[in-house]
Length: 432
Image (tube, rainbow, N blue to C red; front, side, top):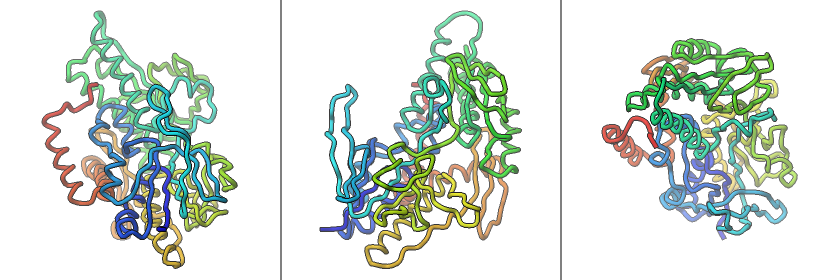
């Protein structure tokens, strides 16, 4: 019987790992690789703010897990993990329901020899009263599409009414990359919607407020990046509130601990992350306060050598940073998936495992079609600041690199060609 490798979670890291292992171990019959995810399709999470604004059509940019599995010699199973039995080496999957709530797939277990948990993270509202009831999170494609539908509904309603011009206000909690990029995309969407005749809400009547509890936007990135981004947001018309922690959220808007009220028609919470709650106390595995599984530099969990974790759901130590962990970023998940693709092959051969060392290759922030800001870091480039068109091109290349890993060079080039053609036959913004 071949070695059973089960990967839970089809995000960027889990999907890249399954594809790499399938093309090596799976294709040669050295292991059976199974990818488990609660959805049938994948979309790169850093693009969800574009789905929310309508500048990206998720239906055309999604990847189908079943097809990817066929092309890359692994198996896909639809399901959501709910438990673990380490003694029998079985993953427990909860029942899968259809749209009417009927049981589509009953609860079941999947056996493993090597288990990789790559279930990502969800937004952390820190228990703020009203946040879960009145804010939209951007953790999934469905949530991003829900926001887009609500935004478009306001425009359609205003378009059908008579009277003075209407207005819409959007409050975004959290000035990290998602919040900043969403703010810029919304202003670009306002211009595009007006150009298609939905001009009862004029671009200047779209009021976007970005609320950050810390002293500056993009708190996880260097100040030399956050400062120009902050200035650009102000020039675009975004109201930026820093040192403003949200105390509660209502249907009418948000209250800050500093006593300010921010009225908002639409509210997005994009501050903080935590790993899925089922990881806490998962059959004795060590986890931290935000439910991340604690792993060693080999990405193996601290109490079980047969279980690995990568990406946002893993608390991986970062040497030389005084106890800090690897940051929850897409490039970290990509690096860890690349490492584990080698590590698992080495382990099957009985060889020692390499240790993961996070390499920061820089950060790029897209401000929609207006601009982009960031820096590139590397042995050859050093630390180079980028702005404008060049930074925008590098930002777009990040997604293309993700596609290269999943599809290969030929298929990705064909996708790029198809995207180029579709620009002349489809609206610049999703209008449904």
